[in-house]
Structure formats: structure tokens, C-alpha cells
Image (cartoon, rainbow, N blue to C red; front, top):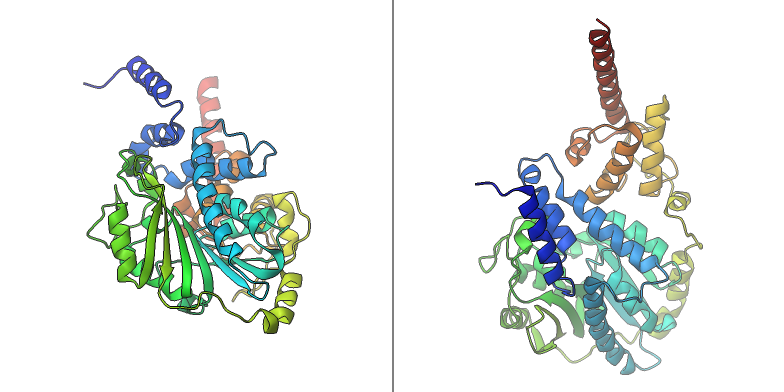
Length: 417
């Protein structure tokens, strides 16, 4: 028998009171996903929209806020605690460096930059190259704005599920690799660690933040975003492996000196540190690379931009197979304005493909949110795959608006009659 709304509301209240101080459960995400689960299953609701609103935008707002060090939010306190362990571990590496060593750091799946923000202040400006990567270009655009004061940071796309060399990365080209709550989301842990190991220099450090215990809420929350797995140890609802399984997988990929902090698994999360086998940890090329490094700093320096919309001035329209065609009407112009602001491109043509311009599913969700507010019509991420140009979307929107206007006229005529 279905539960009454009053019973559901009372149960939610009790759960929120019980877990009010817990940092292990994000009740807002669980509630919103639960309320929309049926719509998600039948394809009427895009789960990424929920996470964009409740997680990604919140993390961006928190990291840009002057009150970001206020740890009254339990989830924020959890991130602060584990990021402090990552930062302390990285500081120990930095203390061992001589003035002639150039430290090359890679962060995989950096996302909204919560961990990045904790680590950058401790890195030596003239001895560091930091490569911020993610699978989605939207995160790179936001990070360029957020970390423009750190000229030694570069921003690149990287899908660690795939061969890094096929994505333009060189083998053994990093001394430290950071991966905060990201490697469990890949298709195959062993293949992923093989790719990670291929990027590390001999003796380089891997610092991972991972969930090492099953999470009962994962399959109805973050599990909705997970891609299919190719790993018999895990299931889509529970993609995590325990500490000992991580140790075994790391050693199988030529890692050694594996350790986890804190030692207890009671908090479900742990920082795992591993060292790539061999003797030499860092490249001794700082002297001969000094000129190149200075030019890289000059190239990477970003202007002081505080508004995301102003990022459009940074990028020209990419080289596309189609010619630029300007918007013809008000609908096309409004869509073009949204694309330009969120893609960070100065000029967008009505026949330009959204994905060839650098768009991804997360940017699509943000575009959809703004388009819904302007046009007051229902659109989905699937619409972007079916109609990836402004011209196609504008035509679809125009038809919907005309149809709604026609229905409104008929309704008024019926009322009059």
C-alpha cells in the first residue's frame, strides 16, 4: 500500500534530524534523486541536472565564497579533513625537493577544483607545473576563472578510462598524481591504474582519496551517473573496493610502499598513497627548462576575470568544417548568447555543432536551465544529441511556442463560446 505524503514528510524529518551532523550522507541529493527516480528511469528527467544544481554549482559557490572556511556544513567538513591529509602528504614531498628540481603535478578528474584549491597554495611557484584535468570541458572553463592567480596551472581534457598517450600525454611525465574520489568511477580499476602508472615518473607518488566501504545510498544517487562497469569486483550500485583490494591492485601495476590514512575504515573514506617502483623520483631538468617554463607562465597567465560570462572574450571560434552564419532572429540570438557565455567562445554560428565547440553533458545541462527560464518550455539533454545546432534548437522551440499559442487561442475561443 502506498505511503501517505504526511508519513513520507514525517519520515524525512526524522531522517534529517538523525543525520544532521553526519558528513557521510548528502540528504538533499538523496531526497531529490528519490523524488525523481521514476522520471529518471523512464528518461523524463536527466540526473545530471540534479547534481549540477545541488553539488557542482554549490561547490563552485562555496569555493568562491569568502566564508568557505566556515565548516558548519558536514559534507564540507569531510572534504576539508581529507583534503588536509592530501595537502600534508604533498607538503612532505615538497620538503624533500632541492632548488634545482621542477615538480610536475597532475590532477585527474579535478571537477570543481575543491581539492585543487587546497593544494595550490603549498606549491612553489617557480618549481611547479600543475596540470588540471577532467573529462568535461565545462570544469576546465570554470577552473581557468577560479585559479587564474596561479600561472603554473594548465588545463587539459583527460579521460583516464582511455590511453593517455592517445590523448596527447607522454609516458612518465609526472612526479605526483592526485585523484580525489574519481578512480572508482572508471570502467575497470586495473586498466585505470595501468594508465595512471604509465603517466608517473619512476619513483613518483600517487595520492588517492577513495571511498573504501559500501555506501547504501550510492545506487539511488551518484550511481545514476555511473557508466557501465567492466570489473567483476564491482557493481554499478557499489563501484567501491576495500583498502586491501586497492593495495593488491596497485602492487599489480608496479606500485610499492602502499599506505592508507587514516588507518581506520570507520569513516568510509581513506587517502591511499603509493610510490611507483624505481629509484629516481623527479626530473632534474629545471635548469634547461627554465626558458620554456617562463614562456609557459606567460602563455598561461589569465586576466583578472570575476564574472564567468566574461570568459567569452578569451576564446575565438574554433576551426569548424562549416562557415559561420550569424543568428537570424530573436530566438537564435538568445540561444547564441547563452552558448557564448557558457562555452567561453566569442562568436557562435547557428550551424555550429555544440559538441565540436567543446560542449559536454554538464554544459548542456546549464544551457538547458537558462533556455527553460527564457522560453518556458521543456527541453532535455537528449535534445542536444538530436539537435546539436542553434538553428535546429531554435526551429524546435519556435514550433513549440507556436503550438502552445495556437492551443491558448483555441482555449480562449472555447471559453468565449
